[in-house]
Length: 329
Ligand code: UT7
Image 1 (cartoon, helix red, strand yellow):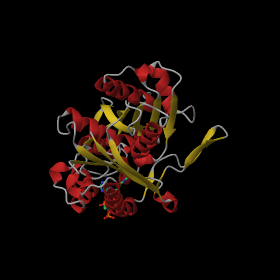
Image 2: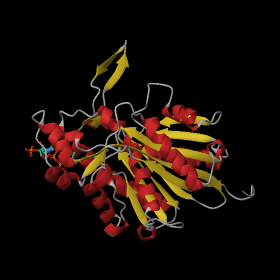
Image 3: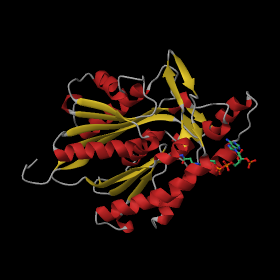
Image 4: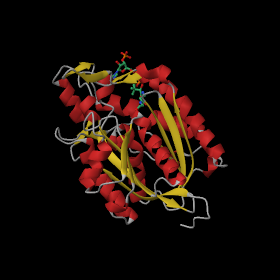
């Protein structure tokens, strides 16, 4: 790095990990049928685009999923864990109330000393974490950051509620961001609107040695759908403008993988052909904060996304939160 030049952050490597238990819609429909709850492969595919999701074994935690994802990203970046000076984990399903999943991951990576903390912005968590890491790298507070989305959403699903339990899955995705003379991350933008806390929430807590409230995910699906479609177009356009770019400059769009209909709607509004849309929701379901880095890693490893491509990442979820990151890979 030349200290006279502006300082940016760049993606140096990506990685991801899915727990081995792949559960198809038909598998899930059979499980629900045992409790008298009706759903079908047809309904789930038609309304969401999801065909399968992965569920972690009961003893496996978010930091367990984050570890292989982090190691793969480090290997892709050609770095040792000891060279990392910042760890940010985006998760809404942390291993414990505290310490943070980032500290637990740091321990599992066998390193010590660097800053490590969690970001809680539900399905927007990864774009929040990338934005924070980018700011810390640009300011000189960090040089090499591990940015991770890791979730075990299966733990907070109510398998008696067919309107939500068919939608989510478990997994982790990771990115190594490093300081560079060349961008890298071109522009970012984050938003939240706490007036909508009730439309997507897990309104439970640990108190007095017991779980109080409702420890399962609750969602007003249509309310979330309507808000998501509006904000995703707006934030994408705003980030493009900040970077001095046009719709046509986007090589790849990686929206949060929640519902293929929302994703296709966003691509259409940005006038992007559907083959510029990275889709993994069919095989992963909605993995919340992990969905964007999982999709990014899949597209990089399959050779779809190449060095030099311009990629728009977009998150949206509980809070209500949303945001976007535009980057050159
Ligand atoms: O990660 C954060 C972001 N989250 C999202 O982006 C989720 C946004 N929302 C959505 O993706 C969609 O609203 C859902 C996929 C959740 C639901 O799709 P929808 O087209 O909005 O369906 P709906 O809620 O209007 O339900 C239609 C029907 C209902 O039956 P009636 O009232 O028409 O008789 C539901 O009871 O489908 C029924 N239904 C189901 N049927 C079979 C709901 N869930 C199921 C199910 N299997 N799993």
